[in-house]
Image 1 (cartoon, rainbow, N blue to C red):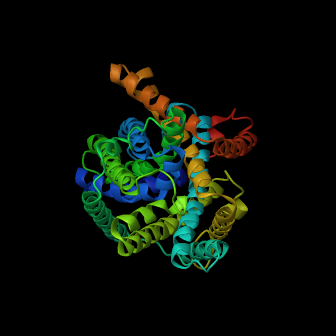
Image 2 (cartoon, rainbow, N blue to C red):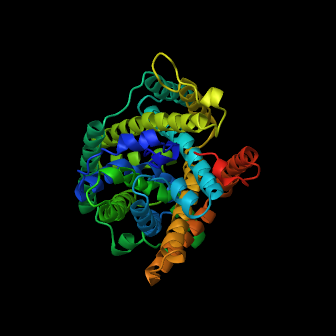
Image 3 (cartoon, rainbow, N blue to C red):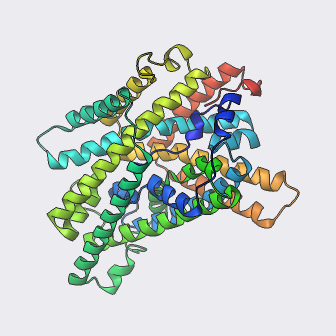
Length: 456
């Protein structure tokens, strides 16, 4: 899993923080931003969801990836434009809260809180699934508890990955992707598929269902989650009004092309859309078929390491976000706003997220967790598209046609995908939103006092 990157959701702008960031140097180029975005999203992103999407879309994985790319490109345009308008803020809830209404911004932020908490859960599930392929005699429940404890223990000690480590990991993942594509090409040269097989991954008339494909696309968008993190670097970029927008769009485009190559090759190698030993780790088995045991092991280790890094960072991000909410009294300050005096970390939050990761790993399936994460992400994406429409069409003197069409089209596509999520995810996500709305309404007297809307 990728680290959810709407990091501004846990930040509170104060005169002190504004002063502390005023000296940041604008040294990042467009190339730097694109590389950062690709590392953030992770080149191996479609590998983790391949089996689940293939199952839901009846084999049309590449079609779902392309549909998701259209939705994310439109949303990336809105993110880039809003980052130009708010170069020091970089968060969906800020864009929505300032352009639409603070209460709507609060709901957007609350949906992102769910994503932050779900991310460590998904990473715990996936790490456990991969580990059990290496050591099957250890029960799944033991692996879940083990990885939840690992994530919690590392964050209690204040361990965090450096930017250089992330770059090295990103390069390593690109190498593994290249090795898989080479092995798949070699396999397909030996086992040459017919003309009909070459088009089936895009459209197979015997299994195609628009409803199924859209459900798959609503999950496949997880491939792109993280591109919005580019906007958090607005204060350190050369020509941010141009480069943030371009980098966000290019990251989505490159990710979509690379993901399409991966899943298309995987489908041709496997030859069908079912029959995986484990749907959650399907891509590992495809790699084994394409390249043998060495590629099976390499892809397994790569996904395990990637999810370990993301799980640890996501765990820390969730704890920090809860701390930010506790510090501003959006959540009870005594528990969530407390900092351990010895090591300066929000210990209560780290332990809470660890407990949730363990419980979620045992109670939630990987697919449900991924869909619930997208439930919150789509709400944020819809909000940003509406914020861009409001700022650049409703409130602008320069009302260009594209300022009307593109954000509304992005909103419509995201809405359609959001509605295409399965009912369990929509019910669970709606319950989470209801809790947040009730709590926020109680805190602000029914959202009548906008200036007191809890900050997330």
